[in-house]
Length: 549
Ligand SMILES: Nc1nc2c(ncn2[C@@H]2O[C@H](COP(=O)(O)OP(=O)(O)OP(=O)(O)O)[C@@H](O)[C@H]2O)c(=O)[nH]1
Ligand SMILES: [Mg+2]
Image 1: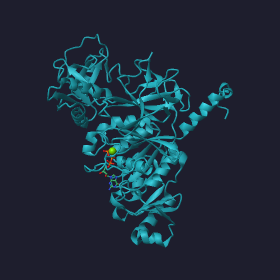
Image 2: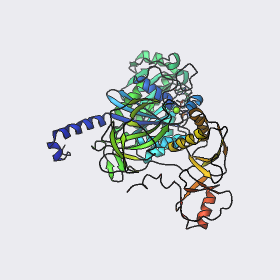
Image 3: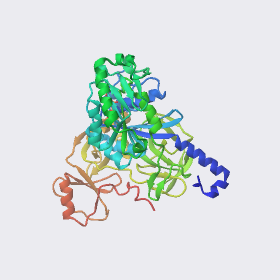
């Protein structure tokens, strides 16, 4: 194609590696599943894995004791409450493609985790509850996708229950989100009259039978729409309404356009029911066919193409104790270019030091498997002896720093009271969970045993309490504290005035001074009164750009 430098064309082995790289990149699809809480992300994830043959039985999200748990909801508190708290990575093969799926939590208190997962993905599956339409959290996540120009496929779920009219749902997506919505299939009836979907471009009717607990693959029948048998199966009443609304869509709806999808200008829409396995096969096939392969990534030295020889990647998540037997910390890395190989020496651009990546894994929920090689689009886990932080760029060759892994300032604060005498485990647990980015820990001058934790969402207090109990054997209670904002004092030598009101001076783990404020108003008041004291929203050293030289 004339784009390969002539020096490399003369070197046969370089040309061969290049094409292997291109082949591997081209077959990868990395996508995140997002929505408002409870729309069915984890259920859909489970079913996609089932269809791809990656798991035998789909686990129920709120499984009774004897049943399996969903593969992506592996944490004890997730299984107890039937919600997703932390983004989970799952990889599987389908039709010769390597799919990497990120199931994300819907609850707003965990959206920091979701935002970071979005940064690691090349496209998104947006799940909408057919009875509720576009909900608040979906809207917020959609805005993040729009900012990053991520292509979005929409799955309108739960048609096995009473649902809003499909025309109204399409209209809702278009108006509420401001994106054009192109239905690719159309639902036939809903609730107990839900029979299946009509594949618009192929003019095929896909009818389903309900099966016991929706656990096994549902049979798919394809027939012509004019077939009298189809009319009989659908039933006269549903048939008339279905034909009518399909007619509206065919004449006035947005036609599907692959380029528009890739550019993030339109979202193809699919209807179905993850729980009862309706409409999953066509959706999964569309995902395989349409979702983009790994895309170039913005860095401080321009766009990094996925087929570049140099290995690059960034840490978007850190998780401690995924495997209770090993008690290790895993840094999740999205590979952005080149070839990652086991035992490779990589550089962390924040600290500028080489690290041998000897323990590298691919993940399937909680399960892991050693990898020998990874390419752009892959999510790899490096066992992290405290060497990586969220936002770190890893690379071989020339230095590079990827841009924009977001961090969120804490808004809720609580005083942690240890209920037993397991001080060592308590300190260790707090330290590790802080490293994960679950919370920030502050120590007010007196009493290191009662630190103050700051979190983005209040539900994270429950996560801290539960994880300290199950992972470290420590009982704590967290009492709400009056603070709502933390600011680091930029200059360590600067003398601080005595604080009025509810504010307090504290230290973080590294002994840097932090002022805890009771309100945003107090922050502003302080800044007006003391214009020479520079305050930072983020801790100075954790900023990945700061350590670069
Ligand atoms: N009737 C019906 N229920 C469904 C369907 N899909 C999911 N559910 C149920 O909806 C509830 C929530 O499903 P999840 O898959 O946990 O939803 P989620 O989006 O992962 O939730 P969070 O991760 O907590 O945001 C569970 O009780 C599911 O069984 C569906 O197609 N039909
Ligand atoms: Mg979930």
